[in-house]
Amino acid sequence: MKKRTDACFLCDGDGKLKKVTFYSGVMKGGTTHHLASVTVTFFERWSDLTMHEIQVCRDCQVRLWRQKHFLPMLLCGIGAAVLALVGVVALILVPGPARFAALGLALVATLAAGAVGVVLAQRYFNKKPKHAQTEPLVVAAAKTRLPNEGLTFLTSEQYVARYEQGVFG
Ligand SMILES: [Zn+2]
Image (cartoon, rainbow, N blue to C red; front, top):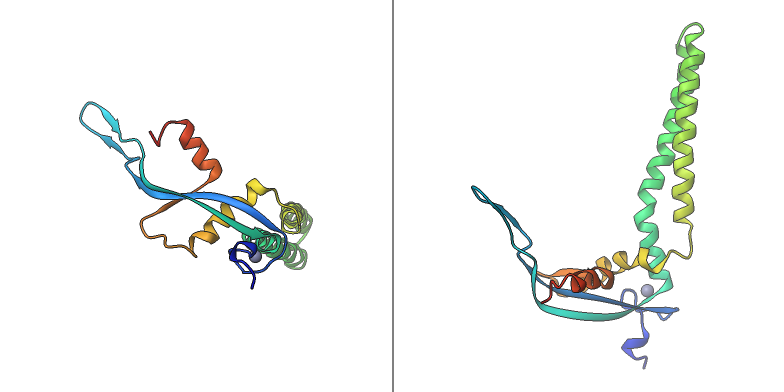
């Protein structure tokens, strides 16, 4: 029988696991009130702070990473295709030399959308996204598998930033 700690928190798989630490707690305050002559800011106060340590496999990290980048990449690809089509249509429908100006514009726009699409595709196919880049995605996914009502979740980076500000008193 496999120990629970040897399995991925998100998929129960046992690929190469990476430890992810994050925190949850009840956040109070952090709001700003404008009174007649003064602005009062209530600083964040936290209670029930809890540290979570989970193991997440490489596949899940890559899967979450791709989920985040798939749609923008797809939209960019569609955008480039539509712009290319506009160029073709302009070539057919616009009369006289104006058609070449229209075609040129559509071409430039197509190339621009294509270039952004290529950058996004490079991100999408990046098999080794940095830990700091996937951590917020892992925490967001883990959150849905934990009791989370009324709780705010923090990555370890966000936790450390608040700790250094003295938010936790
Ligand atoms: Zn997994």
